[in-house]
Image (cartoon, rainbow, N blue to C red; front, side, top):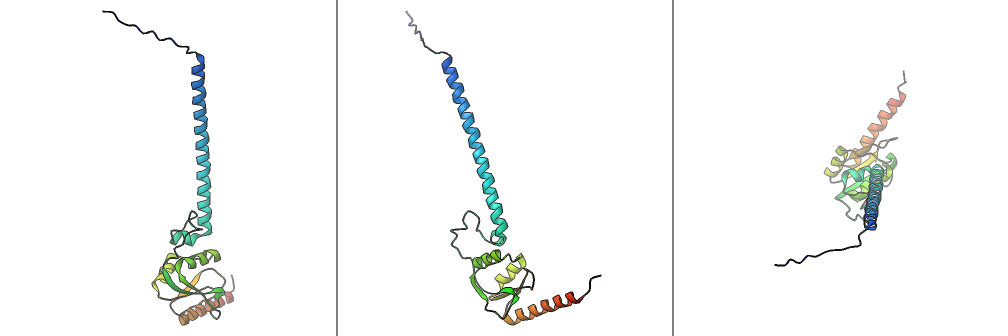
Length: 168
């Protein structure tokens, strides 16, 4: 029985090794560039998110609005009936809010403080009458107009008494 022998001849030389090394080098360089780009983009996203959260603390805390969807977020939030008197002036025409998210946006743009207890109090009342304490960004919240006037007068009296006390 005769065996057929196949002989394979080729012109393989050092060029093939060089091409493989160049290809491997290119892949490593592209991988490093891709990872650097991803890292830069991640840092930019984190910076945008932190900046947005700093500028809009109330929206960040009480809603699902973020820097990704802020421009096209259409949900107005829960229905409410809020009357906000600007500049601690309960004699002026109040701003009226029918939904919570526009109210939160107003508070963020005005840099007015809102804590969890105040948010719960606002949501629990059928109507909320709100103004700021004179000279600061803390709010006075009442369920009717007369109560708001009374609370504002109490705060003004305390401020007057404290101003009259001499420093030691």
